[in-house]
Structure formats: structure tokens, C-alpha cells
Length: 221
Image 1 (tube, rainbow, N blue to C red):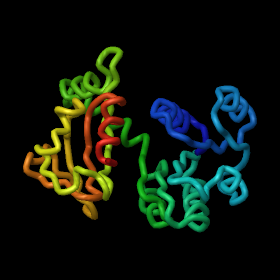
Image 2: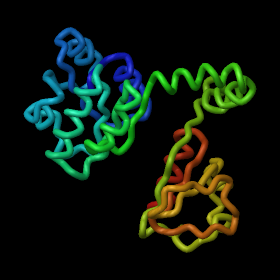
Image 3: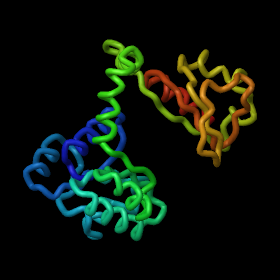
Image 4: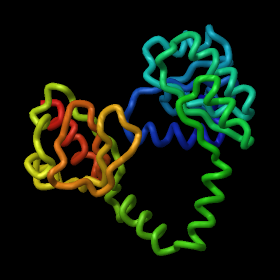
């Protein structure tokens, strides 16, 4: 990622989630600032193959593209896909037409910070109670609740169980908000207690980090 304002927000979220990541930064001053914070960073241009190799693209599960222009982000997507065709890519999009171009280049998802910001502002006017509620449940005092996705592994004891039999809320304290069956793109919100869990199904849950980790352990046993 290029470390503009959007990139910095992504970095801070990754730090909060304690995941491994590498930042590619071309600006030497920003490179030093990140390095001084103890963040793993590579100095170079993210559109160049040798820079992506230094950043360890062969071992990466995904790439976040947040360069300041759509053209640069498209170029990174094309380069990254050529180097590793199964890598998952999320890219910032600035112009409305950029979404289609980025997806055609190989991006899996595109995000427009301007559109999201505008939608958030409108929602605060149109649905203030709903937004306030979401703010409360995701940051309740000193306790931070996160929306997380947890995928059921093939060797999990939960495979073949009905949702009520798994007793996930009782054992973890999590709320199960939605369920996405394997090889589908749609979510079943507030899933039925009789829903059968299978290998590869994804549960969207709300709770504290420790509770989510407990569920991740459950789905892998």
C-alpha cells in the first residue's frame, strides 16, 4: 500500500488486528516515519515488480492498493496479478469509471472513500439513531466489539451440526449476525437455529476479540 491518509487508516486497523503486513512506500520521509514506528516497510515504487518482490508478494494473501491515482492502482493490480494470479486485491477507486477498470484489471473489490464518506454523512442526517447504535456496539466504552468473519474448516466438529446444536453464543458470548454458505455470494441474515453448518461456510459474528478467537479455535477442532 502507498501510505496516504487512506493507507494510514488501513495500517492502523491492521495493527489493531495484530496481523502481519508489509507497507510499500516511495516517499523517504514517510518511509522513515513508518520504520520508526516499528512497521515493516519497503522503500520503493509499488508499481515495479522488483519492489513487490522485496515486499514478499509470493507469500502474501492479499494486497491493498491506495495510491493517489486510479491509473497507478490499475497498474499495481495488473502487475500483482501477473506475478501471483490468485492474490486477493482490494483497491481504492477515485473516479466512478475506475471501479469497472480495476475489476477488469483483476481487483477483487474496489472501495471509493469519497462515496463511503458521502454515504456516512447522509446516513447521519437520515438515520441518526441507527448510526449512533452502530457506533455504540462497535465501541462500547473501553470495550471494542468487532464484526468478524469465521470460516468453518473441513475437520471441524461443527460440520454437520445444526446452528442451535453448536451452542456458539453460549460457549463464546458472540452474536451470529449472518451465515454465508460455501460457494455462494449471498448472506442469510439472522440465520435459523436449524441451519446446518458445513465445511467452508462463513459466519459473520459480533463480539470481542477474545470471543472471536475462541470461535476460531472451535471451528478448527
